[in-house]
Length: 119
Image (cartoon, rainbow, N blue to C red; front, top):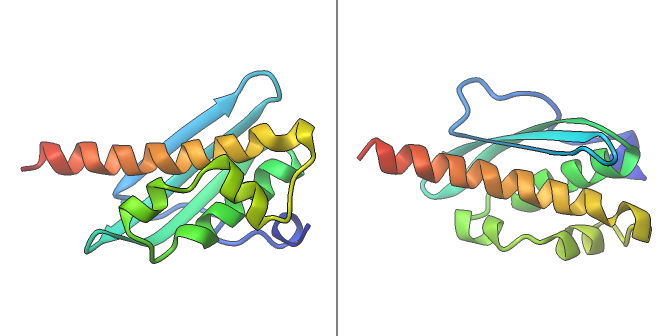
């Protein structure tokens, strides 16, 4: 509940290195995560989420879990680790943790794609 009532890292980054967008048409949740990368680590991360309390809480938790981590460590974050970090989610809301992990992974993939293109 704390991550819903007091979400961390909400907003947008100026000139993000990677952006991940995901949505679930069934429930209407939409998430965007932006990352800044320095020396192979997530130096900063922000999110914007339109959705239920669980979607906001999982987005917030993901940003806290990966800030300062290597890209490989961040890619290892799963829906299960997000749900566990929050102390569990109701079965009907587990898809929210999938969305948050997916948005993070897409932001990293976006960053890697851009970095490979600039070499």
